[in-house]
Amino acid sequence: MPEDKKEKLDEIEEKKKELQAELDRIQKELDTSFDEVRSDVSHKLKPSEIIKNHPIPVVGLSVLVGFLVSYRSSSSKSASSSASGSSGDGFTSLLMKELKKLATRKAVSVATDYIDQFLESKKEETLTGTNGTEESE
Picture 1 (cartoon, one colour):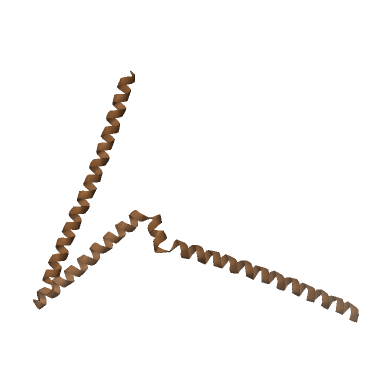
Picture 2 (cartoon, one colour):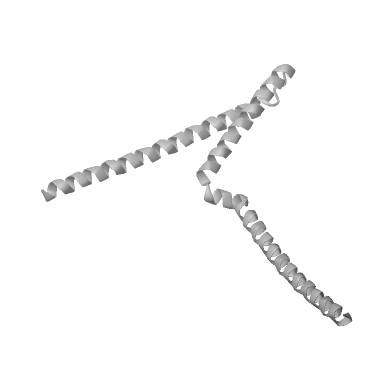
C-alpha cells in the first residue's frame, strides 16, 4: 500500500508539473496576444494614422471645430467688451474677422477653380469622344 500511495503521489506531482507547464504556455500566449492588441490599437489611434486614413473627415471636423470655437469666443468677447466698454480687443477682433473673410474667399475661389477645371476637362472629354465617334462613322 505505501508503494501504491507513492505511485499516486508521483502521478499527481507529474500531473501538477504538466498543468503548470500548460499554465505557463497559456500565460505567454496571453501576454503575446495582449502586446499585439496594444500595439495594433496604439498604431491605429495615432493621430497621424487617423489623418492618413481619413483626411477629408478630419479636415471637415477641424473646420467645424474652428468655426465653433471662433463663434463661441467671438460671442463671449462681444458680450464682455460691450459690458466693459474696452476697445483693446477691438483691433484683434477686427483683424480676426478680416482674416476669416479672406480665408473664406480663398477657399471659395479654390473650390470654384477646381470645379471649373473639372467641368472643363469633362467637356473636353465629351467633345473628344464625340469627335472620335463621328470620325469613325
